[in-house]
Image 1 (cartoon, rainbow, N blue to C red):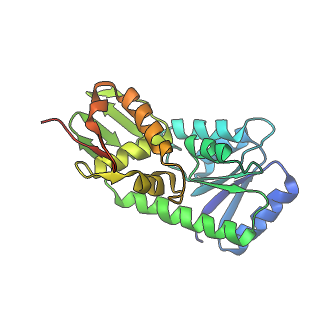
Image 2: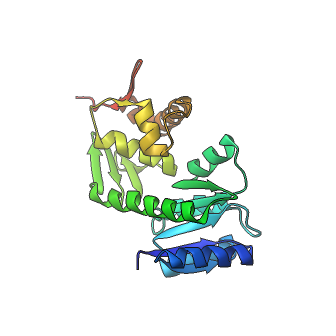
Length: 228
């Protein structure tokens, strides 16, 4: 068995179709028909990945993402959002609240299976990185989805956590905006790089005094530098 996939979709016919397609690809399937059922089953069943419809009757998919990412027990569970909304702003919102990928309807079942495999490959590869990373007075704990500065917790969004973690992993090395887009947002590099600038600005604000650790390298991107 390649993994356990939780399919969250209120349309019974589509839920059955998705389940059948994913089972044929070699995955075990768990289903839920709403957001609250998704939250409960994620805790009880511990799926390897969640396939989440954004338009649910009881709780919006974006709210489900936020709740999953704010809970240490579910924060690292990969999420692929399914949505009929294809505008760039909708895709950005879906990824900002914690989705690992965003698939618009209608979609090819074969493509969806490939995307599931790619997301699982990426997220399982993250376990090869150190769970604990320190940079000066910043301590990042991936396993607990926790960031501390001088012993105090700093609450970050999923994207901010990934962005800071990457900069801390490569402390002192310049990361171009294009590379950050590709690795943090997992978009192609044709996307507007101002997305990176906006998130860095917000991240600096949340880090307070530690915000000065993130340096702008004009014309290139950003790097994390620990004051001596």
